[in-house]
Length: 176
Image: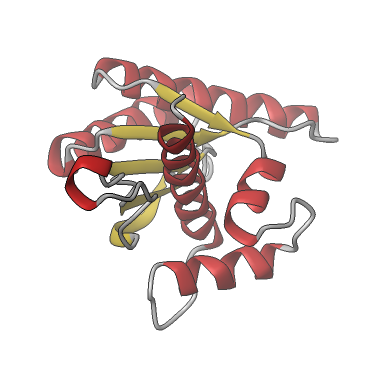
C-alpha cells in the first residue's frame, strides 16, 4: 500500500509518499503481523508564490496534487487535521489548503484519513507531546534515511503517512 501524506498549507504544502502496511495473512505465515518495513517513495513540497492571491494559489496546489496522484498512484491518503491556531487568518488559509487536498483525493477515488498532530506524534514517536525534532528524527529512522527530510513540511507529511499506515495495520490486526 502506498500512502500519500499531506501537511496542508497555501504557501508550502508538504507531501510524503510511503509504502508499507501490508498485513501478512495467518494462512500464509501462521502469524498475523503489521509486517514489512516502511519504504520511502518520495517527499517534497508544493510551493506557491508568496504574494499570489488565494484564487491563484489553490488551483496550483490542486494541479500539483493531481500530478502526484497520477504519477505515484497511491492507494491511501492521509492529511493532518487543522488544530486551533491563534492566528485566525493562518487557520483559514490552512483550511482552504486542506479543502483542496481533500477534493483532490476524492477526485482520485481515495478515502481520506485525518489525524490530529497529537495522533501523528503518538504513532511516530510513541508520545503525543513529542517535540517537532523528535518526530523528524523518528521519521528519519523509520524510513531508513541518512538525513532528516527537508523542508519541515515534508517531514510532517511523511509522519502523517506513517501514522496512517500504522493505524490501518492496527485496525487490520484487530479485525477492524
